[in-house]
Length: 128
Ligand SMILES: C[S@@+](CC[C@H](N)C(=O)[O-])C[C@H]1O[C@@H](n2cnc3c(N)ncnc32)[C@H](O)[C@@H]1O
Image (tube, rainbow, N blue to C red; front, side):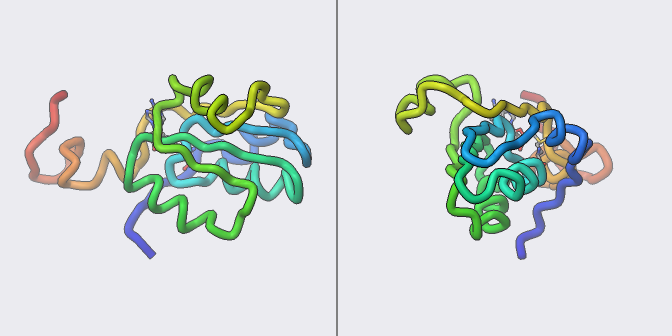
């Protein structure tokens, strides 16, 4: 297992609000560690579909491994701001289920020394 750590916030509350149903299309705009995506996937079996976006290679690698057992997941490395064009490439013109955005950064991104966000470790800060 990799060292990616993130504790999903308001997991049940957020996914309950989506009212997940089998056969519908859902979008997780911020895949991260895959916590929300995994619960959505459990609730939309067997014929629902989940498209998940992230721009972070480590988050995507971790979640790909975590969710590899789910056939109805498509992970896209792109900003959710490209949602319309990316879904259109997949032939999806309408999101029939719902969309979730868990905005911000993952615990992993904030605490990993080399990434330049940590204020608890002695490392160069990335001030961009
Ligand atoms: C708070 S985390 C999401 C955690 C996730 N819900 C979970 O359960 O593990 C936010 C994620 O949004 C991603 N992110 C930030 N800006 C983004 C953007 N413009 N498009 C897609 N993902 C983005 C970050 O890379 C990070 O992985």
